[in-house]
Image (cartoon, rainbow, N blue to C red; front, side, top):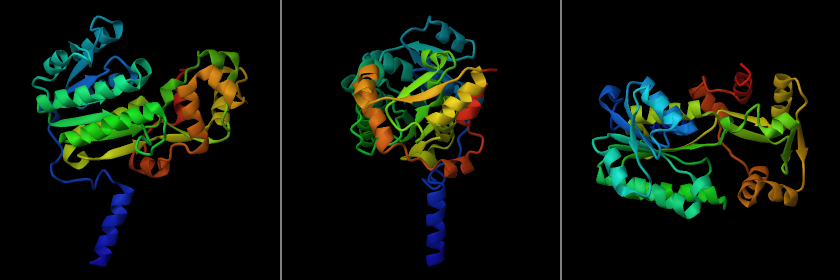
Length: 309
């Protein structure tokens, strides 16, 4: 009996998602309709495309259905709904008859208080609509009392979702690979400024791979219900990123370390607070273990090189 217990414990540690629950099997995606918020953004757009690829019917919530990005999604058969997180009636209309919702909120545009309010409004609307499954995109280490405002705001939404009684899962991605581009001013100038140690490893994931985890959750809600999973695909230093950028662009790109006061004046208080935490603590996803379960995840070097194709 003790051997069986230890075997189950090892299996859980290696793959918490697979052991999170067995109350329902993989669903028939062709009968499921999922509402994706932030559908014209990087993350929401990637989730919409992955869900479509797996056979779901996808609705998209956007403030501007006439935008170029929105119209491109309609060509993929995404049904667009005009909506606003502050407008309960628009949320109710978008969720009517839907089976699930993928929710992403935005600190950078709205700030702490409004992001929390938006998350709660989405949860309340999902409760009213009796949604079967709610997947929320948070941030890795949101539950670790980091004192980073845009981490803490997502943790508040996580807690509210957990207390709602809805069946749900939370994916917690680390930094997006898509935050890097070859035509950014810093890359063109050949100077990437940091206050932290440029040789310290930092974790990244692409929105493509975030979308795959989200779709996995909708595919098997019984196994994912109640799971909150930090996800990362790679860890790499700023020094190595600069080396890769130099190879790609043919121009020297170097990391330049400056003092924290100058960095805060340049990047702002929120970014400086987060960067201090990255330098002192940082994300702690077991990337090697996660890559064993998901070997096809993109590496940072592959992502950067893809930009040059």
